[in-house]
Length: 425
Image 1 (tube, one colour):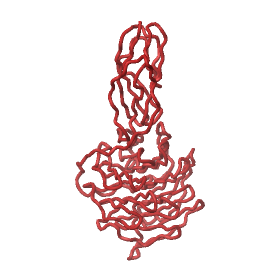
Image 2: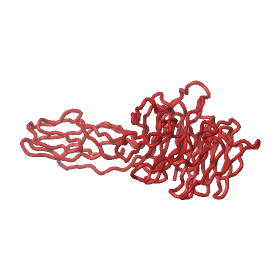
Image 3: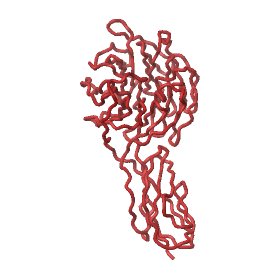
Image 4: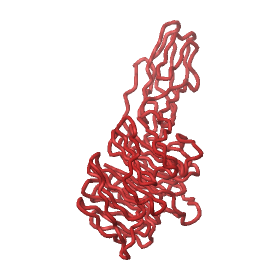
């Protein structure tokens, strides 16, 4: 299970990154077969992109009073995501659309942590030390789990391996564990006796967690206790960590470090600005994002060049339940999906006859169902295309028609194809 916890906005290192490169694409999701007939001519069409790709950014939380926009997203599956913002509101995606942003917490500073190990269990943590839980239908009332906010501004991050185990860390050195019935608190201090300034946490199992801090240290949970901080990055300022298992993690900040199950490898600089988020599915696949909204993919050997995906917003959080699906949220209240692009799978249309009723169902593959269809051009008089992909009616004119249809999915991705339709006399 992959869980991603991302801290709030931190200072940039340099000017905006300008390196933009193509992400390597993976194989696309298989779709349904098309409707074909021996009486139909072959079709020429526009080829859709194969495999998953970052789509267009679109708004889901446009309230201007939300500091830092949408601060966290967590997706345990390709059909469910939860997101929280900087004003105490939450949104839920159930495969087709996002719910309206709804206030679930009175904290004006909003949420700093979110983790959903399943579609029916999430925990969101705020900057006052309170937690709110999701049960698959509704959010609970806030409950204080960390009273450390009395010391000043608090960042509280959470990561749940299952619905019966979660870890949480804050920016004053408190490390908490939850075993399904209450939170146990532990103070983690550095060599000078000061509380560790935690900035990110990932718990892939109940017996293994990694927390990182702004000084380049890592602290681990072994199922019984938290370790002392250990320096893993001389550059310091680690912002986030994601572990796909106890044998693989990626931590990011000034650079990106890989943990191979035995040791942390030296930091690699892949962006000219701070890294903001990372989500790892396996040792061979991670997605990371920087403050300027560029995404980078890890293929097990190297990181890709960055690709701008957020149209100028800060990329606050990325969550990837699989290597073919991610959701990224931004400081402007937007979301961007990484998913296979929908494509028109129907390659040919059976012939119609003038003056006779006709119907054929178009098929699509890839993307995320349900699909929405529209005619771009060319349907003969008497025929129409429904939004569900059914061409029907009674053609009034004989001849050969080159039509163009478009299919879209709920992730705001569209592709089109040309199809040849013969109407016989």
